[in-house]
Image (cartoon, rainbow, N blue to C red; front, side, top):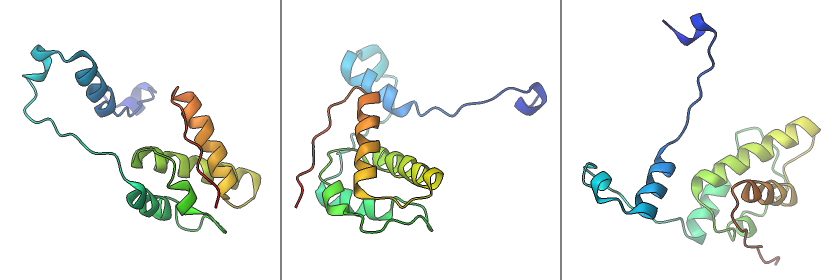
Length: 125
């Protein structure tokens, strides 16, 4: 049977971050010995984050005067950058405005509060 036939909504959940946190926090040898490969990904540096921010927004989204150099000072993952970019695009579309550095920073602050993580404030030029 298909989920559509049952009128069931399916949700896609990325368990890789859950598993990676669990593995390193518990250091459970019984679990880790069953994993064939463990790959540690380094978080992106300033230059990588700058490139990710520059390409994170969907085509056609007005990003006038977006300061990617300033946004790259936020020490966050590429996945979180994409999530913040999509949320910022959605907010801008719903209000009929452009995506600005300030609006992206506001979405980033909200996202970090939701994740219960501190946010480093980028230094203005």
